[in-house]
Image (cartoon, rainbow, N blue to C red; front, side, top):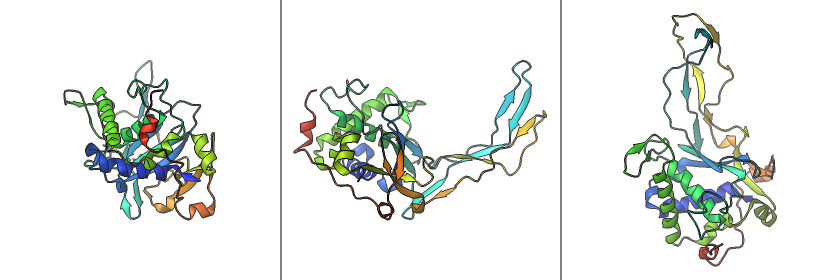
Length: 289
C-alpha cells in the first residue's frame, strides 16, 4: 500500500527547501496524520493544529435563566492546556491532518480555486491545500501564523485575501523552481486510482483513532467562590492524555467510507510507498482543461 501521509511529508520537505517564505519551518517539528473524511460529504480537506498555545486564563461556563437573567448553573473553574507530542524524542509543535479520501479527490473544476488556476489540474488544488496549511505554521511563536491585510496591517481573521494571494504566489514559486515531478506525482491520482495502483491507501493515525491530540480543560486547584450561589456542574473527570509519543502512532488503511488497522507487519515500521508511474514533467499536467 501507499502511505499517503509519508508522501505528503516528503513533498512538504521539498516545498520548504524551495519556497523562501516557508524556509524557517523545520518539518521535523510537524507531524502529518490522517482523519476520515468521506468524499461525498462536505468538510475541510486538511487542517493545521498548533500544540504550542499557552495555557488559558482560568474561566468557567455558565447558564442563565432566560426570563430573569439569574445565574442558574456554572461549571467548575478550569484552565485549557495543550498536550505534548514527541516523535523520535523531539517535541512536535504542529499537527497537520489530512481528510482521506476527501483530500485525494479534490477537483479544480467547480471549486473556488478554478479561477486561481485557470489552466491547472486537480493536482494544483491539492498542492495549494498543502502549501495553505504549511503557511499557517508559525515557526517562531509556535502558534498559528497571524494573517495580514493587503496593506500589511495585522488582521484578526485567519484567512484574508492577502493570505490566499500569498499561497498562490508560493505555489507558483515552488513550480517555477522545477522540482522533481516524482515527488508530487501522487497528487495527480484520485483515491480510487491510488488504491487500484498500490493495492490500498494507508496513512499515519493515532492509536486512539478517530481521536487525536487536542487542547483539554483541567479544573483549577483552587476554586474561587462566586458571590451568587448557583448549581455547580463538575467537569468531565476522565484523564486526558497529556503526552503522546511514537508508541501512540499507527498505520491504518483508508477505505471510501471507513478505515481499518493495517497489518502488524506494516505497523512494525513505516510503510514505504512506491511512487506511481511518473509523468515526463509536471508541465504535462498544466494543460488547459
